[in-house]
Image 1: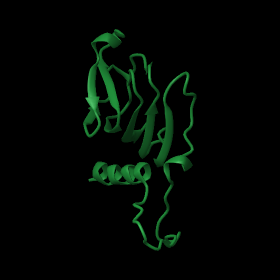
Image 2: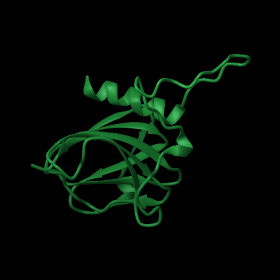
Image 3: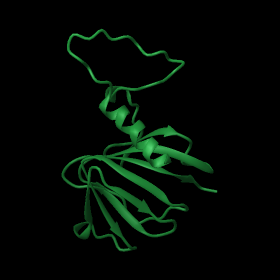
Image 4: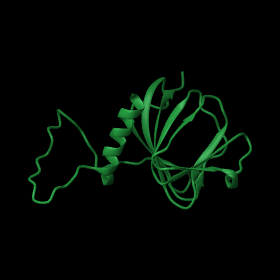
Length: 145
């Protein structure tokens, strides 16, 4: 349920509001909802050294649930690593490439296209990233305890 709700939120952040020809638009009541259009998302990180991130809610560095967007620039891949808890990933756009194990082998990674879901299990080695095109993910997980 959390993954489905977070996926809808992430999709609405990326896609933005629909614009109808000839319609009159009014700004939504900020007490009822908040939104960011794609050019308003304040991505953090260095696009040369690794993925960019935007936290939707929670704090991935602290105990408790969180959801975040991750944008992998082309030709970027993490090295083998683990996470202390399961992480649930939805691929929003692009092709995300994943591999498992302690040996870094980007040529043997598996392509995961947009619309796919992946679970990284706790304490299991994996690596991932983008090859020829960017990939945008939504990650839902529990921060370290």
